[in-house]
Image 1 (cartoon, rainbow, N blue to C red):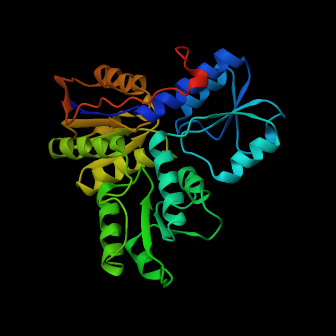
Image 2 (cartoon, rainbow, N blue to C red):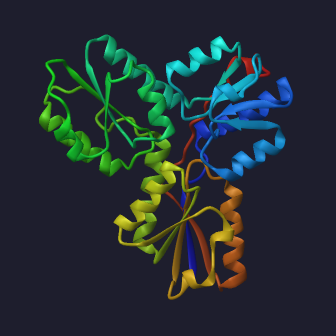
Image 3 (spheres, rainbow, N blue to C red):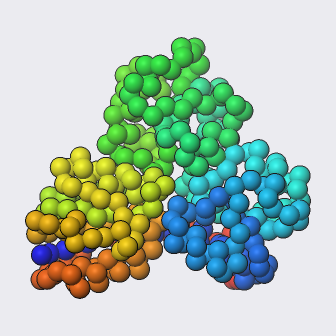
Length: 310
């Protein structure tokens, strides 16, 4: 049996920055610090930070007045900032810079008089935060080509934005449908799908040509991890999303000669290494190799209040 590791995989720059911001906040302000929502969608990361002194909450009403609160990498709406201000909370904003750029674009388009269409999955934390950049009802959320046909007529100019963790292929189809209905629509050619999402999907697409089974390491509430699994299935490869090595059993690998492994942008690398060790213990792995499609160099700096150099 052989194993091919998709590269790049795992943590992206936004996730690394968000996790480090929680760690630095605990170090600087002491325990506990409060984090609104999971800092990233991975329970192992969250559990580790909880042990270090972070308390995770869904509502700011759970945070004591004057305490330190960290906003997750997914971003929050304007009303959340206002609530934090009223509670006199010390806000550390760990919103991914790429998500922040989507927020800024939403505000820019609205100020220019455009009707804004947002492509994404209803109920996802990132989408809630992006919708919250404009007054209720001023941004139209769609998730499919069918939804394009349901958009209300408007005499305004139209612009579109996308969730950063979508399938690149699915997003392209929706954007194409928008352009067909609204020839003058504004927006990035490929939407706002982030570099890390695009790179991980490309790497998975590459190894799918060579494997019988694809394992994606990531939590079930991780959007980008789910998209990787779906991509494998679209490539006609049996694809399974696993949280950790504990989700494995020998029966999963019956008749499998080659395994592909990748991980979502919020999954720590040690989870992948534990799976490889498990495979070594239970099967004769005669080949383990990495297949790299691109080298990632992106790094996001810490904010001044957490950067010891400033």
